[in-house]
Image (cartoon, one colour):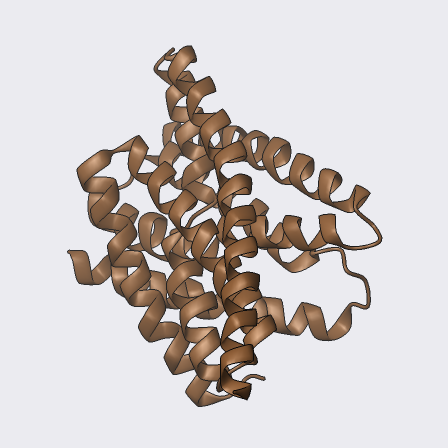
Length: 120
Length: 130
């Protein structure tokens, strides 16, 4: 069971790396689009998975493994630090507020959608 | 740079980071997420600013440790879902404490990691020159 979580987390980490690298190559701003996109989509999907109340193995692989490894709290905080140290420190406030508020809101929305999907 | 070595390193370390997070979650439930996130913020900021000062080793090492191990160890999706779950349980005090400790604690530990990373990275560079 524990290895399944690990394999999921490995997949999630690689996916995060690929998305971040591709987005960073294309964007010229210091605004951390990649991590924001990853964290918000991951929070929504984890909420949905929880709402669906799937079997434990699926939750462990996809939820704890893939989505847990895909989203990241440490990168976000290190980026916030970097933005505070930059010329556009206002971005740090925006980035933190959008991440936390929208992340939790999307998580709630995900749970609701998951519950509705389950009941249909 | 996207190459096989980097991807294998991220996958290997991400595997370990995910398992460690899972174990802490099993042992400490909601508090497990707080613990991994706060420790991870400190470590990633430390690593980032240490390497910025001391000079970077091969990319597979930094990507493996930073993006793989620490990135996979911490989690944003579980943090958000934990808040929703605590609201569902009507544990408002716990939810507010959880939010405060995660948000403020995450930032402060990253800040301490940065300061310590810069300091030790700088002294490493200085020592190498002797």
